[in-house]
Image (cartoon, rainbow over all chains, first blue to last red):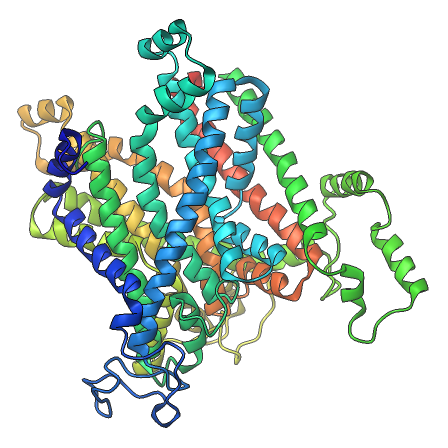
Length: 289
Length: 336
């Protein structure tokens, strides 16, 4: 696949965008951290060193090399918790994007193809979901399902999904009456074949771009739910949950608050940079500005 | 045009019905029996249970309950809060001005900085200012605002002690609500220092809530300006020898503003989502905090009514923007 001309063309445009390459590098580093968390992290994320509670990072007075980024209120190593937190963020991103794209693409294909009542029904349903602020709806859904990381992921996938339905439906409508689709119909291709093999591959570019961008939305929303106590539950080292735990120490120990948020920010920026690069590379129609 | 507006309004009503169904089912899907919850820790005997169940209409068939709910909604009755015993409608309208005040300040903050920044970035395309600004816009756009709020509190309230940490005004001041907007009420009260206190309380929440819209506006203004600056009529204006200020400030900016205004109109959803986090962190007594508290307190009636009202606001603004846009641009009217 790496040697295919299509990939080479894609890579040529992608690497033009310096920001996108920086984003890719940061994402790769975080991905490595997530995969090798057990090897890299100096301690287990739940080990409590009760003699070293709220110890500052190494460069500040009172810090030591034993805990490079300091410890939290029960003496857990911040660095180890942050490295393990990368796991959760990637897991959240992957699952949410997988759930919302599959559901969204399916519904969008069905809506774009059948038109009429089915289309109207699906489109109105998506309008209803979009009528609520995404975070509020996710919060309400989690309240119904019960607060946990899995339920938070389901709720976020549901609120992100309408964007995919709209994108897919619009692309299907644009492609449906083109000559190659009519040709496929005339030869007698089945409906399923036309949907998935003829049209879908030609609608994928905007969906891939949207997927990269919703990776960052998913991470942000999950962290926000965690922060409100409706996402991952303590002692899970999820970044948003870590922030919520640390809130009461904001004026005493800046590191327990600053570091998890910084990790969220860097990851989200990296994914957004990558998304911008993907858009430039996959969708030459959009102006590069 | 009339057909276009008619179609939009029909769609609005269909979506509205859907929203009522969603908020109605919400209360019935939540775990736990609302009546038992209402009774509190002492429990409740069977007779009283049945009586309360009848009072709230929970003993009726679901469809019947839904139509009762719908009738009440159209009569402006959204039920009574389980916790405060006040009508949901009244609670909403006491708290709503706080959110509106905060949102307006946030949008003004975002426009005041984002618009000029975007224009300058477009005029200095590729230069250092442009790159620095676009990088900051990306960071602002990706900001976890709950963390941003905590950082600002650490610096401005903790280290510098310039701003208070929470609330709308210092507890030292006490005056009647006239408009519900603290900035206006504090001026009307004539109490010395009240206005200053209200402003100080507003600064941090405004910055926090305004950050994401600011980044969006700056990016949108820049790309709209760049697009317009490439048009033929700008070249004509230059050829005529008009001053740079006239070309950029009048000819280009006016056309570039159209997409920017749309973005501002559509950011109501972003603001309300942001208000949930901002208000919770700064203990700002608005509808965002009210919704979060009600979800945690399992105050079903409030959640049901609040969801409905918030969705109504967003839908109305979107309808307004849609129709306005159809008026300006005939191409949009044709779309289905």
